Length: 508
Ligand code: HEM
Image (cartoon, rainbow, N blue to C red):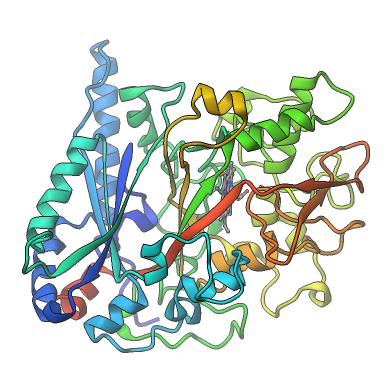
């Protein structure tokens, strides 16, 4: 190819490295219609604040050195003050700015609200996504991500950004549409320790350490060839074009993978971000586990196993394909083992002895199951590999811990959930496909002796009820009806431009 090699100084930092975060603010904005030129002029002043991938990798090294130095002196590592800033735009935002080239992604161009029926969100027409919050129904032009090690660092950084655009003043060029704060949950590893260990470069992907419904999240990420130079056992390496526009592997495998996607030149080294505002009914989920333990075990063990069989991992992160009957926290915490499985044990393909076909991790990354599908049973042409379906997940939790009252009553009082954020070069191949064609499709994974049912965590059935089979390993075709525990309240598809594109095409 005639392209210059991928330069990590050109790519915004959240995509390939992940902004360092204990807390992150998502600032959704509307560009003032009468001040578009001024906004684009001021945008030039934001660019120096934007954290690049190269800078995030630099931060990670500094944190690691700080940790090693502290250990040498036998003292706890000090908390380094660190922040990160990225900016992304919706199609509405591009159009408002007068950037009218077709970027080559139909889902992005439509926007998520119009895509909501495709994703299975309740409501039949675009005007009728009853659960969505007003800001996302009205649409936003863009979002600024600000992350940091503390709320005060993020507040300082955000104030600096607001000054650039005179936010709040009568002559402001952007207006706040919605502000959502996400926090890494307080875990076993508290405070300094946790943040520092989060960013250790020994982990080939920085973990967000989210616990969704109490489950360790952010374990399985694809490694990007040429960027993540060390990989953990079992971690799949994918071409940069699976995530980054215009690079090797940027294909539309839903259409014809041999026809290159036509992209404007400024799209190079950008990425699409699918953002979803997902509320989780945690006390209700916990109550369901309590009431429906896998039979034949002590009740607590049976409830834990049910949760593990719905997710595909125990709360500790241990994959049930490797630890089918009993949690193994050491396995869950060990990056050299916790992703080293493929659903390819001899009993895996046709039975759910180890893992239900519909488990969340198996539905959203079927590993060997997918490669085993014959071309005829595959719904779309293209290479038989999951690699072009991989997304990079950068979400964070929002909302308070479950209160004693909520735990007692089994009813949610305070809103909480996951700020789901995933990068890919093609939304229809990535997030949209995983949600629509895998999680929401009871027939997937194809070629199994029973129809697997819905992804119990995120699968949606706008037309009716949900269920799955395989939660009980001794009665694998027994179907378990599933209430809904994840409620999408909005979101948007965004484009994260490269630094050169911001300089030459977006800013004036
Ligand atoms: C993995 C929870 C939404 C795609 C996981 C894991 C957990 C989890 C606990 C296991 C940790 C890991 O393997 O890294 C949740 C919860 C969600 C949610 C509670 C909603 C509130 C989504 C959505 C998608 C998605 C909307 C995409 C449509 C994935 C993928 C993996 C994963 C691709 C990695 C599977 C693998 O490679 O083995 N999720 N998730 N998740 N999730 Fe989700």
